[in-house]
Image (tube, rainbow, N blue to C red; front, side):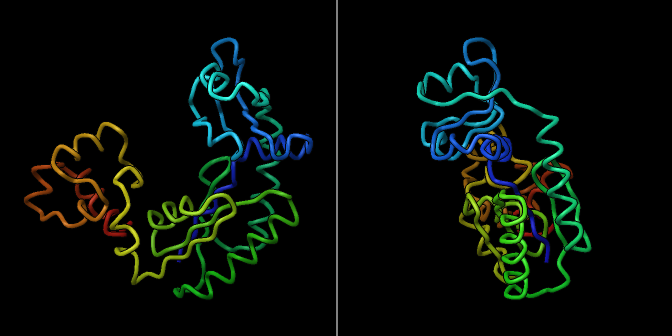
Amino acid sequence: MIAHLDLDAFFAACELLEHPEYAGKPLVVAGDPHGRGVVMTASYEARPFGIRSAMSAAEALRRCPEAIFVRPDIDRYRRRSQAVWEWIRRRMSCVEQVGIDEGYIELRTPYAEPARAILGDLQQGLLRETRLSASIGCGSSKTVAKIASDFRKPAGLTVVPPEQSAEFLAPLELRALPGIGPRLEARLAELKLRTIGDLAALSDDALRRALPGSVGRELRDRARGID
């Protein structure tokens, strides 16, 4: 089994450790909201206002005038990230960090329930030791694990038994599949493909017409939970 661990709203969480008075308030880590700043992340209290990463800070301010804006301190976030991943590596034998706030963990069990117990302990230990929460997804491939980690945020734990991978993926929107962005999603919608299951069900001939080349085969494999 493979797990994907994603630190929840990491930059905002780092700021909350320094400024506990911000807890429970809409917090936006961004450049100048009165200039050309861009949102790097937003706390979960800010997200109901539609504030998302890569949005202009000015738009975030328009959507939530009462939000607290904090300039990013990347060096401090990197130090905090290094401490987190060093802590994880001391406990797990096979770890692949793929970003400042996310990475994959290979587990030594092929079964869902032991994986759930291991990851639950890891998740709770991380919170105790670092005061940072993480959402974790686990499945038979990186694709399933990555999608599962987004399933229940924040502090969620979603374990997909290998035999249920296709069932888990099938009803989800195509945009949930890594490698499918807005343009490709729109193109596939024109072909009446709207869910991951629709893509997984394509025959070889239909796939060649919809997505010729190796990219199409790779995306269909991912839609089938193969990675």
